Length: 408
Image (cartoon, rainbow, N blue to C red; front, side, top):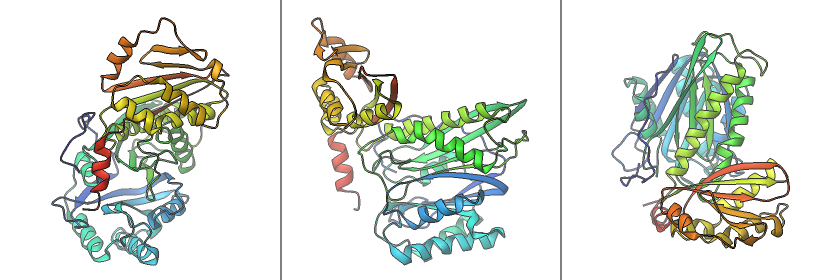
């Protein structure tokens, strides 16, 4: 974790314990830092799992095995290593992951396919098997830890621990969600581009849990970007222990299914926003809202073209109401757009309408808006009913400093 905390940081929330979930932490020593860097979460038998994974084709063995084993629908443990991504490490990296899975499975008396491993950090360095083995041995003997400790342990360039919670009523039974995430740089929407874990005591089938997580991902994690780079390791997993005692949710027609899906979406949205607010070097949180596109997917693509534009992001960093850069980004998105129908605004003040500057445009309220920490950009394409919102941060010299020094 970085010493300099993001100005957009939020206090860690009070996350409730989840029945059937026990988090622990230990120090494996993957890097020369004086803190814990291995999180171990034990899950009761019968825990359902769903996952979404990076689309980066140079992904780690952790991602390959996780994607494969999540389809089986059952989980007993999670291990997260911080400081070493174990990506682009060939057979040695694969052996390290399988050794972790076998070690934990032997302890729990379960199939190794029920043990899920994630790693984050420097690419191209095999995960040291001896350090991983010792770290897991220490974690197995450790006392249960708080969610905040677990969240801090999985961080790398993060400046603050990130967590979220929500509840839902399924019939007369309350189900609870607690979730943690890490992510700060190498953030772009080709799945989730971070490591995130959602735990709930709801009884839900693996197939419906997967359906809900995939839907939530499309409108949250896949709508954020810090730097347009998609990591090799990124994973979001949802675990459901079934301990709440609700009537099991098997599909979208189950009573209470809508409430469950809404709560899961809420948790994912909270986590996604926290990642952007901890964007490397970020000083401003930016929401880009696109309306009037030919489809929702087209609106999202346009929004991401704006959010990923270095010129737009540096203009916001400099508090410059340069709406011409937004016009440029819309035009390069490769989606249907008409210059003479396009409208651009900041913070609710329109600067241009129907393809031309407003005659009575007053930049003063826009300039005042851009001095704040939370910025909104509004774009109306003027062609249809498609809409989407994506979230990003500004681009400052801090991003360069963090990444230039990343391996040191």
